[in-house]
Length: 140
Length: 403
View (cartoon, rainbow over the protein chains, first blue to last red):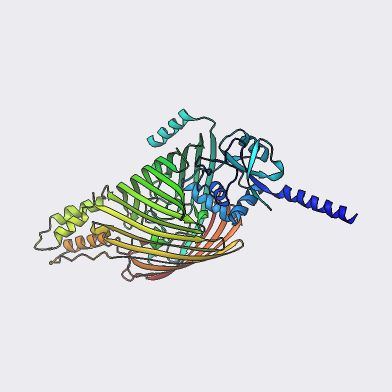
């Protein structure tokens, strides 16, 4: 009985963990199988928009005030969302880089990535479908 | 106007699956100063300043940016900003208006009006939310009124073993107003601008070096009048007359700007410093050395930062004529005022407190203590005085947000 309870607890913990994880996804035809942490930071901070093979990446993002954006960007950069927004205001208003395309929700992002060969985005791990490929995971 | 129309026409023709981003920024900035004679401003383009504990909102600004992404490779950006300026028209309102093309992940090409990549913060100096200082260090940033350039540029980025390396080359021209006492107004043109910036990002570090050269494209009415007047003075009466005559010939004179900068930001500690050297083959601005060093620490929603900045030029006061009479004395004083415009020798210590109000707005408070060895100075407007106030404190409080 005790063993069964422990097993269920571990199973629930793993499920809960998977609910919180955020993954970086690409189109399933994309030859990229994994991205380094640095490549993820460079892409989503607008520094260098390229996959490991050098091909150009198109990043997708969420509204400025969305929770997933704050969680993801803070997790990959180790900075507060205030610092990240200040950084993006420097980059955006100086005209150096085009910010990622913004979409309203996870389902739209999943659909766009599934239909765009060079797209890269991030979604909660439990929402991933067979139409996209996971190339990086952030465990919360 | 024609530039904007051409950009809009082009984007209309090529629009496909386009998305629009509409963003803005605003700074509500209150400034007051204990200075008795120098009217404090933060850029030599500004026609207003505060002194003698007056309070002014002259450093406030508001701006909007429209970005049209009609493909992953092509975008158009238009930015307009309303701020303290002598003249307001479409040209002075337009900060950015360019087409951007990214043929590969490494290359970005732009054509139109882009930001002038002169110093580390020149391109976003109007966006108060972007930086920690309440206002950019006066000694370093106030002297260059030019913020954008009409021309073309190319940016190349590549990852290297040292970090992310960026090269940015730009050519074009720029105009910006210089405003001074006695209603002096000059829409100064920098022609044939050629610049190169190299930057390297590695972990929490950013290293940056820039060299830019340009030629003065025009002169102001006061310079013309002084040249005409001094041409009638015989060399026997004023031996330095030919030299002064040449120094007032500013059209075609070369101006060179060199700057190195470094920034460290590990999310808690923030260090930033820049050094610059500006020279020309005109006596108007012979050599100007300036620099600043900032160190700050973040405490959750609060940042405290200390800054020391300094600027010093080696402009020389011209020799007076050998004969004194009212007309010559007046001419001499007029020439001194002209050649002394860039006679700069001062330093400032600043303490800044920045508080994040929410994810897109911040409140900043900054106290500056300034020691000026030379007044009048190009940095300020002035109340006429024979006994200028060489030490003063300035308080700036600003609310900055982006939307």
